[in-house]
Every structure is written in structure tokens, then in C-alpha cells.
Length: 73
Image (cartoon, rainbow, N blue to C red; front, side, top):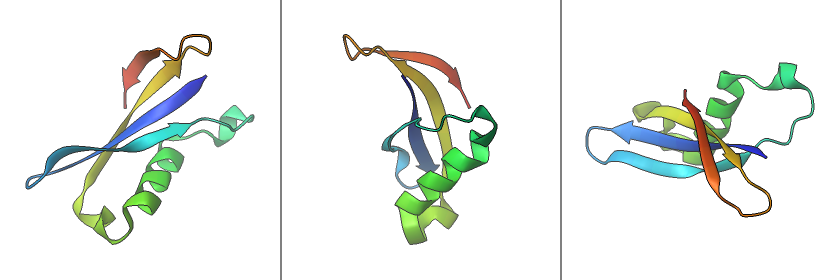
């Protein structure tokens, strides 16, 4: 299963893990970098403007739950 680990960065707090978003969309044309970032901004709310947001695409092995990092976005 594909998922995204979402992080934010600012000068005061450094790197902060926001959350993990499992990819559920069936249509790959709807999967964009901006759609993942938009989800992170919704989670951050008012603090989103002051943060740099980035994510890593990961693969979760269903049988073991292990994470495999794909690449940094």
C-alpha cells in the first residue's frame, strides 16, 4: 500500500511529523503533489502559512507493516 509521511519545517521548531496519509484514490491522474500538500495544510490549519511542508512517499508492506521509503518529494 502506498502512503505519504508528511512533515513541516520552520526555524523555531525544526522538522515536525504531521501525519501519514494512506493513498486511497483509484485514479492515478488525481494523485498530485499539490493534493498531498493540500491535505497537510488542512491538518495544520492557521499555522500552515508559516510552514514549509514536504512529504515522503512510502510503501507499507501489508503482511508485516514495515515501511519502505520510495523517494523524497
